[in-house]
Length: 328
Image (cartoon, rainbow, N blue to C red; front, side, top):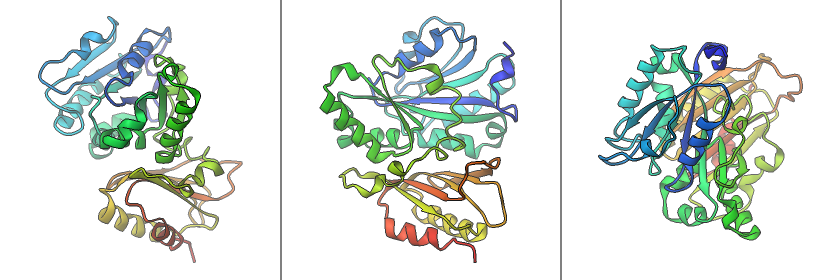
């Protein structure tokens, strides 16, 4: 197949980030992707925490390009290495159809996602297709109770693989899914055994661009912040059925991200500006924001939607701020 056929309309190479807590099944998923007969070639970046790497030896003997970083956690000490690897890969464009990054189980995905916002060369040559988080159905509730990393991995996900479902009963599985959904109301949840997810469920999702994820948000998800739970990380989803003033929104969201960005893990929105027929897709990772106009949608009712996922969220204040962006 044409090696460039998987690039988006701008020619950028799609990047899939695989994350999840220790032992959830990330490497199993990666091996499934590499062993499927899909006709695509991937460059794979594997990160480990510690001086001696072993994950590279666990990946099947494939023809893929494997790059290993084991001098620290990708989320804090080696983002520069990641940028250099991605930049080097772009000079060899045409030899692969996509890039897969597998993070260490102790990684917070935020700095990985920020890489695709802050470095202009990376931003110009690649596109973050989706963050795919694998969670262990047997232990995820315990991990959400004692690990900030596990919470962040769930919160940042575009696709969540609720893995090892064969190890739990129906009630335990339902409880795990409820806890996950309470933190992240927009991610697609797929129940799996041994990370056996269909490839089209984790690749070519275009999920991080928001062109799909928020367009499909239904009322159940929009009301997901109404029920009570004890997770520190939660979500608030808001809607407006009146046009938005872009200057008012930019002033409000800019101030909000600057003052509370550390607590805002991800912000995602589809906005309808006054005198503009194209919806605007907005997204932010902590304090770093990006956005672009999408093609007009025939079935679009003009409702603006925004979802905040983070800590210490004040729903009434967020609601007042969002409503303050209505065009005169």
